[in-house]
Image 1 (tube, one colour):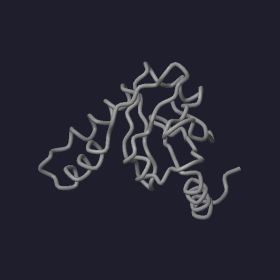
Image 2: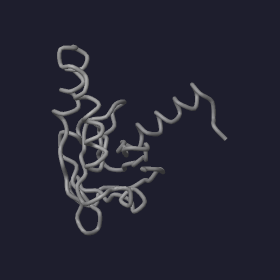
Image 3: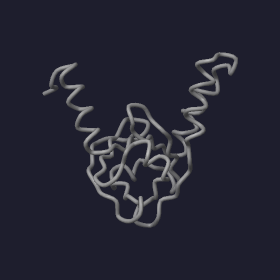
Amino acid sequence: MFLGEYQTKFSGHKRIILPKKLREAVSGKEVILSKGFEGCIWGFDKESWEKEAEKHLAVSAVEEKARLLRRYLFASSVSVELDEQGRFVIPGGLCDYARILGEVVLVGAGDHFEIWNKEEWEKHTKRLEKEYGRVS
Protein backbone atom coordinates (compact mmCIF):
# COMPACT_ATOMS: atom_id res chain seq x y z
CA MET A 1 0.00 0.00 0.00
CA PHE A 2 1.25 3.47 -0.88
CA LEU A 3 1.21 5.75 2.17
CA GLY A 4 2.74 9.06 3.27
CA GLU A 5 3.76 12.43 1.89
CA TYR A 6 7.28 13.15 0.65
CA GLN A 7 8.92 16.26 -0.76
CA THR A 8 11.73 16.01 -3.28
CA LYS A 9 13.34 17.81 -6.21
CA PHE A 10 14.47 16.70 -9.61
CA SER A 11 17.84 14.93 -9.51
CA GLY A 12 18.47 15.53 -13.19
CA HIS A 13 16.49 16.36 -16.28
CA LYS A 14 12.92 15.44 -15.21
CA ARG A 15 14.30 12.64 -13.03
CA ILE A 16 13.14 12.10 -9.45
CA ILE A 17 13.70 9.48 -6.83
CA LEU A 18 10.81 7.42 -5.52
CA PRO A 19 11.12 7.61 -1.71
CA LYS A 20 12.06 4.35 -0.04
CA LYS A 21 8.69 3.87 1.70
CA LEU A 22 6.87 4.20 -1.65
CA ARG A 23 9.50 2.10 -3.42
CA GLU A 24 8.87 -0.72 -0.93
CA ALA A 25 5.25 -0.88 -2.16
CA VAL A 26 6.38 -1.43 -5.77
CA SER A 27 6.76 -5.04 -6.82
CA GLY A 28 9.59 -5.08 -9.33
CA LYS A 29 11.22 -2.11 -11.05
CA GLU A 30 8.41 -1.07 -13.38
CA VAL A 31 6.10 1.85 -12.58
CA ILE A 32 3.19 2.99 -14.74
CA LEU A 33 2.64 6.75 -14.84
CA SER A 34 -0.57 8.35 -16.06
CA LYS A 35 -2.46 11.63 -15.92
CA GLY A 36 -4.38 11.74 -12.69
CA PHE A 37 -7.08 14.17 -11.67
CA GLU A 38 -6.79 17.66 -10.17
CA GLY A 39 -3.54 18.14 -12.10
CA CYS A 40 -1.39 15.38 -10.59
CA ILE A 41 0.35 12.36 -12.07
CA TRP A 42 -0.66 8.90 -10.92
CA GLY A 43 1.93 6.18 -10.36
CA PHE A 44 1.12 2.48 -10.07
CA ASP A 45 3.17 -0.64 -9.68
CA LYS A 46 2.41 -3.10 -12.48
CA GLU A 47 0.03 -5.27 -10.45
CA SER A 48 -2.03 -2.32 -9.19
CA TRP A 49 -2.11 -0.82 -12.69
CA GLU A 50 -3.51 -4.04 -14.13
CA LYS A 51 -6.27 -4.04 -11.49
CA GLU A 52 -7.11 -0.41 -12.26
CA ALA A 53 -7.09 -1.09 -16.01
CA GLU A 54 -9.42 -4.07 -15.55
CA LYS A 55 -11.98 -1.82 -13.83
CA HIS A 56 -12.05 0.51 -16.84
CA LEU A 57 -12.05 -2.27 -19.39
CA ALA A 58 -14.96 -4.00 -17.65
CA VAL A 59 -17.27 -1.13 -18.60
CA SER A 60 -18.59 -1.37 -22.15
CA ALA A 61 -16.94 0.94 -24.68
CA VAL A 62 -20.44 1.59 -25.99
CA GLU A 63 -20.89 3.94 -23.02
CA GLU A 64 -19.55 7.38 -23.88
CA LYS A 65 -18.24 8.14 -20.37
CA ALA A 66 -16.30 4.87 -20.36
CA ARG A 67 -14.73 5.65 -23.75
CA LEU A 68 -13.73 9.15 -22.69
CA LEU A 69 -12.18 7.95 -19.43
CA ARG A 70 -10.28 5.14 -21.21
CA ARG A 71 -8.82 7.59 -23.70
CA TYR A 72 -7.81 9.99 -20.95
CA LEU A 73 -6.22 7.30 -18.83
CA PHE A 74 -4.59 4.97 -21.36
CA ALA A 75 -3.40 7.55 -23.89
CA SER A 76 -1.32 9.34 -21.27
CA SER A 77 0.07 6.21 -19.63
CA VAL A 78 3.68 5.19 -19.88
CA SER A 79 5.84 2.52 -18.30
CA VAL A 80 9.07 3.70 -16.67
CA GLU A 81 11.80 1.69 -15.01
CA LEU A 82 13.32 2.48 -11.63
CA ASP A 83 17.11 2.53 -11.61
CA GLU A 84 19.19 1.04 -8.77
CA GLN A 85 18.64 4.15 -6.61
CA GLY A 86 14.87 4.19 -7.29
CA ARG A 87 15.05 7.10 -9.72
CA PHE A 88 12.93 7.48 -12.83
CA VAL A 89 12.28 10.06 -15.53
CA ILE A 90 8.88 11.67 -15.81
CA PRO A 91 8.07 12.11 -19.52
CA GLY A 92 7.78 15.73 -20.68
CA GLY A 93 4.08 15.57 -21.50
CA LEU A 94 3.23 14.44 -17.98
CA CYS A 95 5.52 17.08 -16.44
CA ASP A 96 3.77 19.73 -18.52
CA TYR A 97 0.33 18.42 -17.54
CA ALA A 98 1.16 18.52 -13.81
CA ARG A 99 3.16 21.77 -14.13
CA ILE A 100 6.09 20.11 -12.41
CA LEU A 101 9.22 22.26 -12.64
CA GLY A 102 11.26 22.05 -9.46
CA GLU A 103 9.89 20.97 -6.10
CA VAL A 104 7.72 17.88 -6.17
CA VAL A 105 5.46 16.22 -3.61
CA LEU A 106 4.81 12.49 -3.79
CA VAL A 107 1.70 11.35 -1.97
CA GLY A 108 0.64 7.82 -1.11
CA ALA A 109 -2.97 7.20 -2.15
CA GLY A 110 -3.50 3.57 -1.20
CA ASP A 111 -3.37 1.58 -4.44
CA HIS A 112 -1.22 4.22 -6.19
CA PHE A 113 0.94 7.24 -5.49
CA GLU A 114 0.54 10.75 -6.85
CA ILE A 115 3.13 13.25 -8.04
CA TRP A 116 2.21 16.90 -7.48
CA ASN A 117 3.66 20.31 -8.16
CA LYS A 118 4.43 21.46 -4.58
CA GLU A 119 2.39 24.66 -4.83
CA GLU A 120 -0.60 22.84 -6.35
CA TRP A 121 -0.47 20.21 -3.58
CA GLU A 122 -0.48 22.94 -0.92
CA LYS A 123 -3.50 24.62 -2.58
CA HIS A 124 -5.28 21.28 -2.86
CA THR A 125 -4.62 20.46 0.80
CA LYS A 126 -5.86 23.87 1.97
CA ARG A 127 -9.00 23.48 -0.15
CA LEU A 128 -9.66 20.06 1.41
CA GLU A 129 -9.11 21.39 4.93
CA LYS A 130 -11.45 24.30 4.27
CA GLU A 131 -14.14 22.03 2.83
CA TYR A 132 -13.87 19.15 5.28
CA GLY A 133 -12.27 20.77 8.29
CA ARG A 134 -8.85 20.19 9.72
CA VAL A 135 -8.37 16.57 10.75
CA SER A 136 -6.59 16.18 14.10
